[in-house]
Image 1 (cartoon, rainbow, N blue to C red):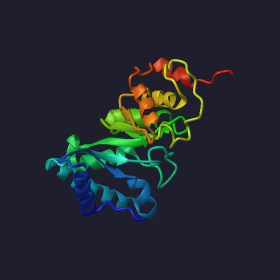
Image 2 (cartoon, helix red, strand yellow):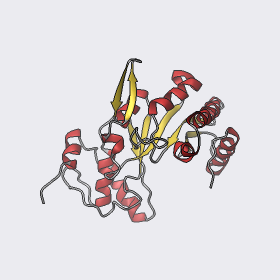
Image 3 (cartoon, rainbow, N blue to C red):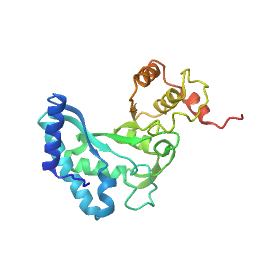
Length: 234
């Protein structure tokens, strides 16, 4: 299986998506695993040149009214340590590429990142190096870095493809009735201005009903969130 970022391929995929959904405009168009799929097999300048061309195409689609914004749907690149060459991706680098194409008002405004209790990097690890006023480089956690750049984050895999459905969590503060619901409540309550939503896959009607109960609950407070993550004696 290959991976393509060529504007002609993206144009084809966009038209197919619009046709299947019977829409004139998509709210968000994602480039799926672009860095993960291409960086290990290309020089940095090659993959970044391809991203620039993709961003140029997507900005043109915004102007034509076919999409409203775009972003990257990722798996590992924003969760990896900076020392992991060809795996780690700098958020600041991607933002600067978007600014190069669309200026400060570019439309690359969304990132998808897996976030769950076994993949907590996006809200705990300061692995994004960001320049402060062009002078000091600061190591920042991914979610706050996204907030600084005006990037919205969509959390994915809160149940790790169902593997966390039977992993107990404390019921303290959650007020939800089962284990999957507790994981969803915890992940959607991560403190931070950039996290806008948490996506979860559902196959059974009872899963849909249970998950809909979660959205009726208020988010946990910051204190409740961190208290739930503390080790508890059994």
